[in-house]
Amino acid sequence: MPNTNSVKKAHRSSLKKRAHNRFWKIRIKSAVKTLKSTISAKITDTNVIKEQLTVLQKAVDKASKEKVIHKNKANRLKSNYAKKTAELAQKATKKSK
Image 1 (cartoon, rainbow, N blue to C red):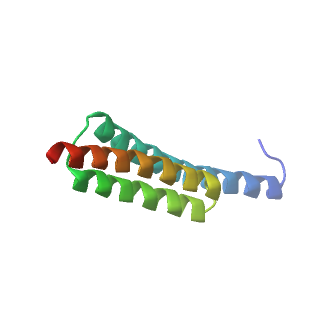
Image 2: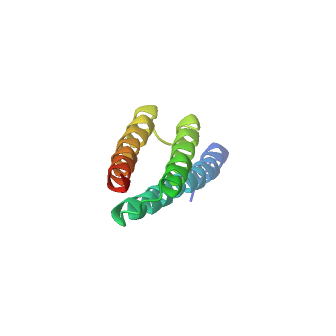
Image 3: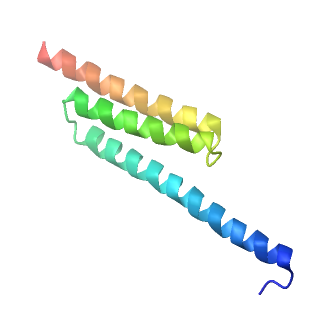
């Protein structure tokens, strides 16, 4: 148990920060998971994929802005998944022609 008032306050603060960080990390993970499952299912509907990519990008940008994740990690995630969706979209257009 914390003995001093400052330690008690620091503990309360760290619990709030932990909850905030977990919220954003879970949100990012769920967005990544849905996008990965869509990509692995090879769904050819590009609108669905673009929508999910947008959701991921928003979540990552907001988490980066609130310093939950580093800005370089945010950019790396966005870039990697943008490449994957672009490849899938390109394959879908080749098949349709």
